[in-house]
Image 1 (cartoon, rainbow, N blue to C red):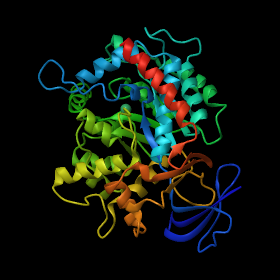
Image 2 (cartoon, protein in one colour):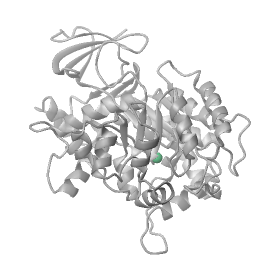
Image 3 (tube, rainbow, N blue to C red):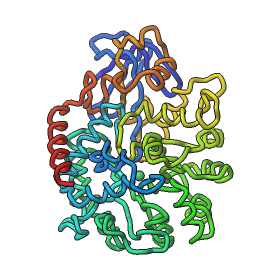
Image 4 (cartoon, rainbow, N blue to C red):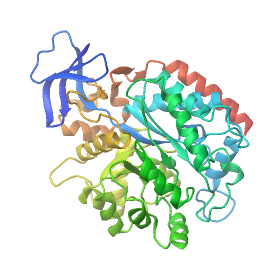
Length: 454
Ligand code: ZN
């Protein structure tokens, strides 16, 4: 049994001093005592629950920094990014996917995320032929998770069509495609792939989007899904227009009328909602899976965070394209987008409250819900998903309680994260993952090969 002593810890009922936290051999939080003596426990300055990263496409990490050139015609949008992604897809091997995913998961842990919801759609060989094991690439993701010790929620994706009109997949999309029957087999094979992983591993389903999945299939998945259901929704204006033209309703309105989203659902992006849609979707209990850095990178638009939280909406954050994996920066970008739009400050805070605290509490609870993980709070019986912040950092000197979170989120970065536990696995120590050198070296090799091949 590991015992931690925190000078200060964020418990569900608020900040407490001199907190003794037991981590059981099963990776759960055991007994918690406040106003305790340090004794021989491992001492940390500030102890926080570690949130889950709710949305990632790990392989895209290899493209980070390569899609910032403007396309040849007019306004650029997805153009350079999509062209680059398709070139990458012709090259990526299973070994590449394993190396890139390990890097992503390691960076998530070093940023303070204890778990990752991997929205996994890169299923087949280059050219689109399935591997002998339908879930071969899921095996690579699971192996990466075993190497990094992150808590994995695997979300195999069903991706059937190239648009709402049910056109066939474009050449760049054929590694993703499944028929509904093939998807069921893939799901079963993915469950087998995840079976050797620790008990905190979860599995859900991910109908890709309203563009890629037929309405009947989506209703069927919604009805029969066992675990969490993740889907991209209302990310860009052209997608809203396409869905409205085909189905006679905007994406969020169509979802509300046809799929009855509830607390099992995590809807990714939701950047394009009317005020009414925002209120109605927030009231369902579904989590909005926000990816503020990627949404800014791709020019998606601004999520209506103020109205969503006022309406009782739940949020999680994810790193999506993994162009940059940074927990504090996702929260800062989310708040700053609201400030720039509304020309105000502390938009997402409650009256009289801290912005960092409000956001951190929200993504701990919403993240755990979205990836079906018993975590997000320092409480007896929950998984020991924990972050310790660096008590020796000069920027935290004299800061207490919520000021610590505000300093981390708005003034500093994830270098303040000194230790991270995922289900009790102490993977990040003094700011570095235990396998940092080996994982970085393998990633660098992969990146060099891919860069010369595309
Ligand atoms: Zn995505």
